[in-house]
Structure formats: structure tokens, C-alpha cells
Amino acid sequence: MVVLGIDPGLAHTGWGVVETRGATCRARAYGCVTTHASEPIDLRLGRIYSELRRVIDRYGPTELAIESIYFGENTKSAIATAQARGAAIVACSTAGLAVGEYTPMQIKQAVVGTGAADKHQVIYMVRNVLALDHDPRPDHAADALAAAVCHANVVRTKSLGEARRVLT
Image (tube, rainbow, N blue to C red):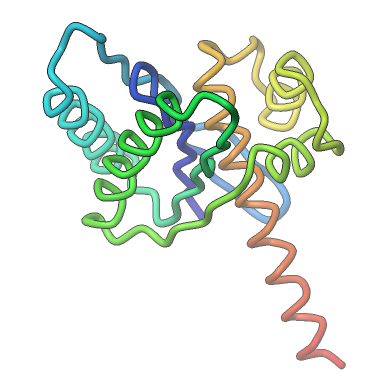
């Protein structure tokens, strides 16, 4: 299975492609789509869409793992993130990817073992789970890789559960 993880943001949309074989996950690629506040919103969202489509065309993921939006006190920031998230989902939807949505807490729980993990813990565990020889940077890309690992674990766990039901 090849999973595209996305950490949405209008200024920085992190992405990471993870390939799984059984319980083993390996990073195929990762990066970040960057847009600038001085650009019109339509161009920023268009860049997120088109760059993610290039990633999809190049790496051929079949599944999407995307972080859901946390609505804190900054509504303006949440709206901008929601717009970027929408552009990312449309890029994936037009490519036929199955969508998995996860809260930041679910992703941290799946990768680190606690939903209260900090950014350094997430980066450390992503590096170890994916057997990278360096910390994935920028942080947005590390978060996207974490989302992909979370999704791979959820799908694998569901498959194991279904296999157990068939055997019993």
C-alpha cells in the first residue's frame, strides 16, 4: 500500500509518501508546498492543488491520510487551513485516492503512543519507524509522514481484525 500523508496549511502544506509491506513502513518521498501571504488566495490554493497532483502522479499513492482541522481560538487561521485542506482533498479525490481523516491527537497516539506528544517526539518516532538516517524536515513534512504512518497502522490493524474473524 502506498499512502500520501498531508498536513494541511495555507502557508505550508506538508506531504509525505509512505509505502507499506506488512508491518514495515518506508518513506518514499516527502516535502512541503509553500505559498506566500502576498499572493492572491486563488493562486495559493491552485499551487497546493497542482503540486499535490504532481506528487500523486509521480508516486502513485492509493490512499490519503489527512490531518483534520483543530479549531482553537484562532478562527482566521482555521479557515485558511480549511481552504488548503479542501484544495488537497480535491487533488486527491480527482486522482481516486481513498481518504482517511485523523485528528492531531490520533496521529500522535498512533506514532508516539500518546496523544500529548510534542513535535520533537513525533519527529523522533517518524525517523525511527521509517528507518530514516536524518530527521525529516520541515516539521510539516514530518507531520505528513506521521499521518501516513497512522493510516497505514489503522488499515493494517483493520485487515488483521478481518483476517482473525475469517479464521474463527
